Image (cartoon, rainbow, N blue to C red; front, side, top):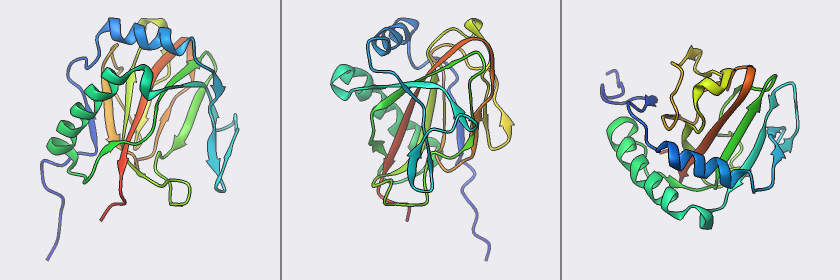
Length: 191
């Protein structure tokens, strides 16, 4: 007997329309400009580390108490998308959202958002979401690639949701600044 995934199941979902308005995107960008900025890190041998050969970006974290309506809308959206496309159990927001900024010359090499070492990750990341905050005319390059596939250029407020165990990257930004909201949805380990 061969067991296969149901035909409805997906591992990459691109939103057809915007899930955030341009006004909400601007509000998030404005808020992130007031928050502490840090260099993006990677996990290497179970340690959070800076490695500009693998990741070069600036990030800030959106506290839950600063954007509660946004977080509430996202959890409703992801529950619906999960039911219709992924079918993962117990999916919820388990971490603060991250605003990632990639200026000219910055990138993030191939990586996964879920880790093998469960000591690092008490809640397993199951779904990842990247939402474009600024207008795509403001930068060049910075393409999102998932599982070896270059996705169509997102529009402002549009998102791509994908299984966190898929390899993905952001290619080199060659002009301007790319700003995105990254959110992870997780829960108890896969069964």
